[in-house]
Image (cartoon, rainbow, N blue to C red; front, side, top):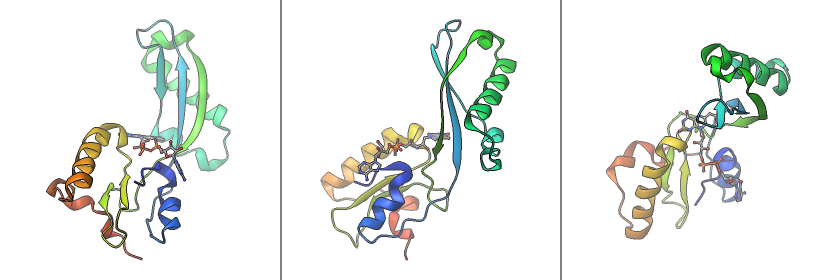
Length: 150
Ligand SMILES: Cc1cc2nc3c(=O)[nH]c(=O)nc-3n(C[C@H](O)[C@H](O)[C@H](O)COP(=O)(O)OP(=O)(O)OC[C@H]3O[C@@H](n4cnc5c(N)ncnc54)[C@H](O)[C@@H]3O)c2cc1C
């Protein structure tokens, strides 16, 4: 099962498969905040992501994120940035998930999606069923890995 997120293209390459992916890094900051019921909040903004390739330091990008969040949620005023990283989204080149078996490589499956948080449960259920039964579910028809050919 190739469910290696941003490394999926590299792992596919280990078996000679071509899985083209986009390059879309994102700044993700975690803040600690005692004042609101959620004690750890993850901040993210597409506008700030657009600054990654300008060379601005991640710490500075995190400060921008934090400032934006405080404008929207004043209760975050005394919160502090706990962790920041620039992460890569696992996005196949056409932006759709790549999910299911690859008929030319028996026993190899892919589960690669940018929407892994929202779609993870249904992808897991459909793939487990496909692996156990060998039957292909129509719900995955538009997301089949074989749409990528070298
Ligand atoms: C900036 C950003 C924005 C996002 N926005 C959204 C969103 O709007 N909606 C949403 O649903 N999701 C979102 N996500 C989540 C993300 O896009 C993925 O969908 C989610 O992380 C997928 O989880 P995964 O388990 O497939 O991969 P990952 O969480 O990346 O896990 C992959 C795992 O594979 C392991 N691995 C890598 N290489 C190897 C190897 N060679 N051998 C063994 N193990 C290996 C890694 O260590 C890791 O544990 C976002 C993520 C980021 C970074």
